[in-house]
Length: 255
Figure 1 (cartoon, helix red, strand yellow):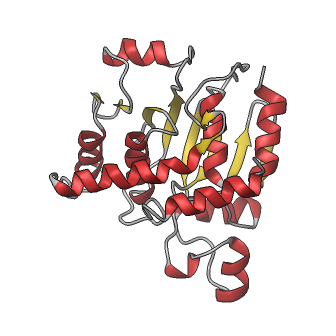
Figure 2: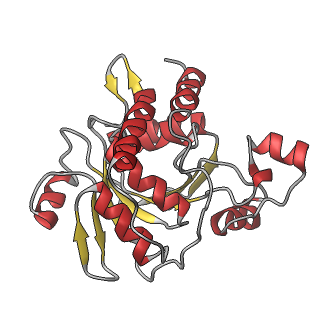
Figure 3: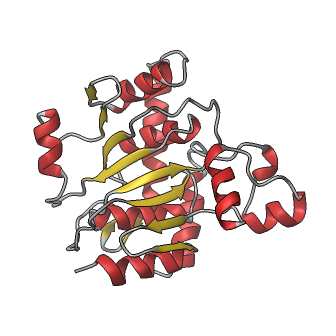
């Protein structure tokens, strides 16, 4: 499957659930990074990642694809069972399963909001997340679901991304398959003029680029704002463009 076809499928899949695009309520970043044991293709993990984007919270993502050996055993030791997502918050001493409970915890603890309503709203959220996750379906199975052999990095990579981004999804899927830990720098949009690609935003709206915390960082350090943006301090590499990032990850870490 071509990269552009992959992106198009992600765009179509995202239409089922247009969440995880903008920062809804920016939370104060905690002193210690949240840890999320995650499977990119899981619709339940997606629900948690959406809220991380909407609260403007970064997290250390520890990928746990099926057949993985790097973080799945660790997740079982930490939580007591193989169930994902699994959130670990060292700021409060909290370890918890179940996406609905994790979403409520993040909303209350960091968003200073109220727990989400359950019932049909929860059913609808899970259903639309499942439909959206179908965009990751490929001939070989779900992208971001099964592990493939890789070399472990000495330290986590960093990825500037937001959950809905169709260009970021293939990168996160490959990071998951290769079991590469990464710090997710959520880069949600902060203004309606952020809509569309970077080229549309800059040429049509001529709007400020740094509308949220991590978008300001990108503007100040790279002169532009788009996602995905990968930083690999293991090799001194920093780069834009999802196709180039995918190629780099395969060449550098795939066994």
